[in-house]
Image (cartoon, rainbow over the protein chains, first blue to last red):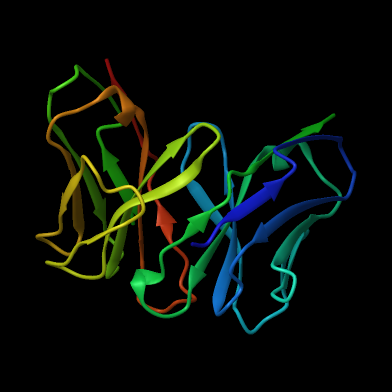
Length: 114
Length: 113
């Protein structure tokens, strides 16, 4: 059974700091990995998707990497802003079969302070 | 496009009551999903559907039933609500390709007393 772990559970940083969120998973065979953002009381918004055959994806100030051999992914946020405050969730999904079901980690709650 | 919508947004039930949560999407997506989110446990998949008329069990299906009679709608039913079903419920939908992202609704907060 796939298990996804995110460390730390919560993180508070001053504005402008670069930061890294971590995600680890137990079964790395042929999985895509996604990072989502969830604002309080809202649904999830997809940030980045890394295909099983890829090593990283970038979008603006966000960069996500995938290391299947170690079962780890990192989300790097450059020059953090108060608007980045949210909960960040990583999730893995098989690339074939089973409706591409997502298995989620428990999230990292990020607070960026002025 | 409204994207993924969920009805209702909030609901309070008494133990033993029944209710149906409605998820609707206007993106012509084939796949649809129901998750529940509980503190400290992340999102867990309840049921999902890979097309109109199909349903399948997820990680935590007990106590729930689903139906997908129309492609754009995915209904989640609780026949006899229990306090353990107090949670926030999210619906999501996506296209068929594995690299297509899931689009999430805003959630339904359900409290069972």
